[in-house]
Length: 529
Image 1 (cartoon, rainbow, N blue to C red):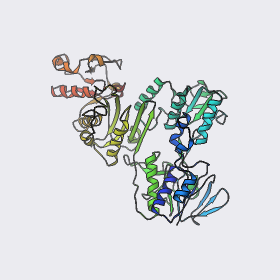
Image 2 (cartoon, rainbow, N blue to C red):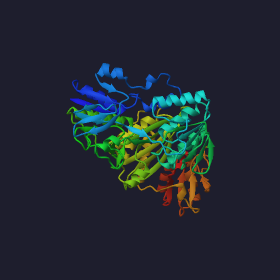
Image 3 (cartoon, helix red, strand yellow):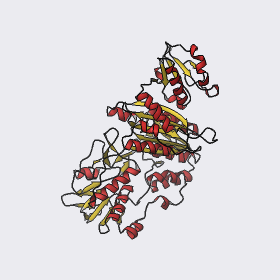
Image 4 (spheres, rainbow, N blue to C red):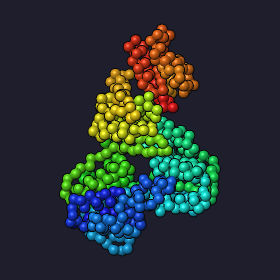
């Protein structure tokens, strides 16, 4: 059996090596149109920061290793021009043809390059390969560039911005979306943006570049910004030219349609990686995957089924994490827009808590936004902090994967150690308060829902009390609340707040049981500030 794989990125390499482990006799050929092979694109910002001295450090395997260890033939600088399913062959850029018994399309995604006047200027770069990363390094070192524009506030754009800022440059990020980190909700991304601004990054959102001049850029808002160099990091789009020419079905998300066995609409042609369309297991809508673990999983599934091992890939969830300076930001499941698009009703809970015991000097705060249904089903989590973010993110992602409920969060046994977690971890408290909202019908209000007649009652200790709104706030610390019940009007709407959400929740339980029928919990991103 001869298996041809189009694409030498992580999907193609994973499919090839897994296939070899399952079939020692298969002839395996990888076709890669560029001169680079098995490059970890996530490592490119480290190249910009010059934290990676040897480029081989972010290369998964060399062409020689693939041949020597796996007996896999890799052809670089060779583009596939055409797939001919009727003849089970592909046409190469050198006019040769290669026959296949099974074909895997693993061409990944291509970087979007916006159509902007002047974008081909010599001081404007893309960041999509080792060569491109090295060109950027050579340019800013050779010309002592100090002012940098980054187009795109996503994963690569922010990481590139961090690397260049740490090199002493003035960095401006321009994004045409309403907020950076487009997969996150606006309120959460806005909090992250504020933290990055404190580090020295500058942002223009809801903004595009109308024209690049040699040292100036004209923005859509009329402003003109000066720059020495610019980096394009505007996102990726599925590479589907070959599948379209071969009449392979393309889905609503722009990716290749595959079944649960990774087979396309044409027999013996499989696809995997960022160019395929899969089902989002939370909202049941189609999506493309940009998650490395899902990419590898889809590649292994394709390889298994090619050799006759029936493995199914029924969908996945988004599970992203990014480290920016000393801050870690995570997201799993769906955001609010994705739930609305699918017509899924949901509740949301904003919460903050220290990730370790307060007597630990380096204990830091973790901020969360949990999305969940009326039935308690966990729909999404956005989380940020300095420590333990990956652990808690993966706990919730695992629960979402098997349709988990908020009761599981409340009862989850988190490994306890004072420096790592509290006896009642933030995961547990998220579940406990979410259960009150979903099942006990605890009333909540956001800050922008308050009226002049409402009373915003802050129950923090005076040392932690802060004015985060122009609205009138009364401060009665929780320990003094019982002795001041007579001072709280029973016929007015009382909105309880604190610096985390948990103290206000305790106060809610107290007042609710004392007969205050108009008591609400402040459930708003202001508690993060």
